[in-house]
Image (cartoon, rainbow, N blue to C red; front, side, top):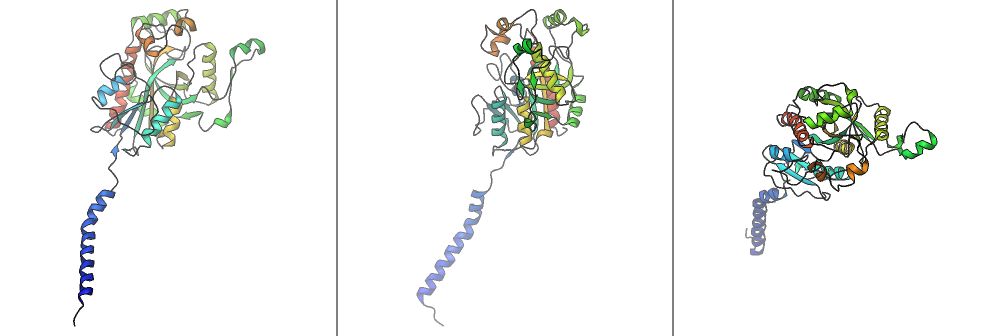
Length: 353
């Protein structure tokens, strides 16, 4: 039987096309494959740095960068807010996110990193680190606070303290339960207990000036050496940096109102945002928060708001110019924070957290 040339030609063309498609299938598959994500094993979250990331006066980030991401360049992450910086070490899986100060910057920068297509965060441990003001009569300069609960100091109804003269009211803050889903967070109690056992005996630094000031201002503490320690406590987050006996009473009341397992210990500007964002990404139970006390929540040495803050425009000037707000405790406190946090981070990197 004879086959026409036209039919034979079409058949050959079909075979050639089929062969090309078969040969190209691996190429198409390789081109369309999902890029391999890097495992983000530990996300370390300091909030600010002073100066450079390495080699000068340390802020919250520097010691962690030098240990876990030395020489790593900044990673460009889509949708990061201004002032936030992210560094990642491919070799150990540690990431450092310098969020910027305050709740908004922290929530936005954490969301950007945790939603990035570059990283697998399904098993990420989050270690939030930073400095804080300390609750008078609960802690002292240089203490490291393991946060067991975080509360929002700002949400609710705050009354101007001057109204107290008119009304003789007892408290200056009134809650609003419509915020209950995000105004306070309890951290994983079992994880907190595990971490506390790991770090409770970590040696901490102090200074003679810090101990002298504590002795001068807080004789009622009844502690001879005023040596710092690791303590469990509640953190109160406020976008507004406050000091004073009325603010202290409000913070005590807020922690008590929410039934926090440990007393109010630290005032800071980010922790409730860290906890809320971690929960949004299913990582609240993997969150450890550590805060080191670098000043107190009431004025010391007869200072006033004007004398403490009026001459200075940035936090870096406060800690570099021997301001009475932080005395000479800031740099030793950064080492206290690093020494305790390193125990937790190393355990997470080793798979033991």
